[in-house]
Length: 243
Image 1: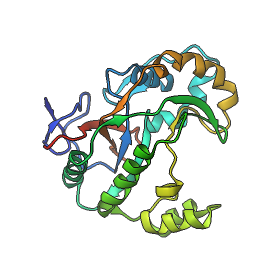
Image 2: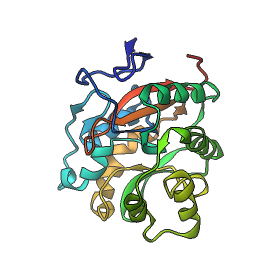
Image 3: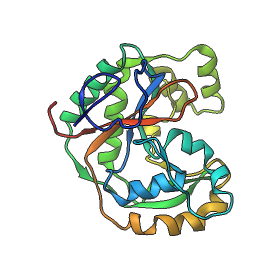
């Protein structure tokens, strides 16, 4: 077991990270497939990098893929549960509460995922509704919100543009419009407008991995080390385990 280099706790991987490390600029809780899951290998290859090791990974031989995956590459392969946020009480306190939350949750079967066009973005989406996923995401948003430093008025105004009334209420209360009843599980695979160009390649690339059943059994803690840096997976926190 290695120690998390942001807080000294024992647990998940943090290999390849520079030392010493300051407090991260932002932290988030994501879903990430298990490292042994073929979906993790497929997703890292599709985006061109492994956020757990920091290593570049060769992408599939699809024309223009590097340029059309630049946005999701920075945020890494994941599905958002608690969106990125600056931390009010520091990373160690945040991680402690993620561990407490995870210890109260039980693993469950993931729904089958499929490659889809989500408003011009290529993404992995559930093939059927999953109340368990919805409840877990809502729990992450509400249980961890005390750690969030609210964004300034200018940033909030940018997020507010074009939102529905429900999304504006969520933005005001939770700092993000797409939470709770507005949340949808998705693992983004392309920049905006690139879904059509990459659809066939993505369906072929992910076909084998998506056919494997999987269990949701951990929360993945990602950080943005400094503003604008690529996100890194610094710890996987197992569900149902007391730390």
